[in-house]
Length: 67
Image (cartoon, rainbow, N blue to C red; front, side):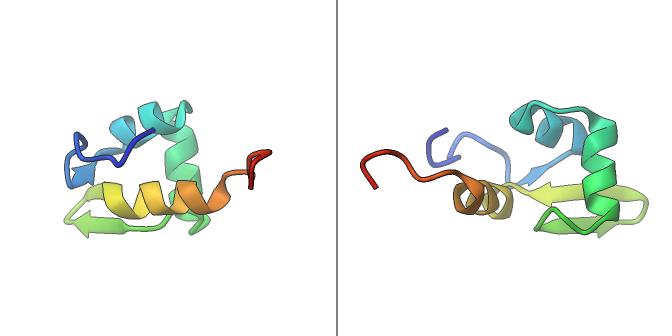
């Protein structure tokens, strides 16, 4: 996945869904259940900090055979 340097600082729900290969509805459900980190609310907009999301993904990954 890389270091995320090509991602914007804040992701929309659609962009986060694309990154996680899921649906926008699933992203909103995860936000509602407080399962995603880095949530920023600006008025009615919900954005996700890309660095927090990538760190969270890195923590969730299964260890490889070399580890």
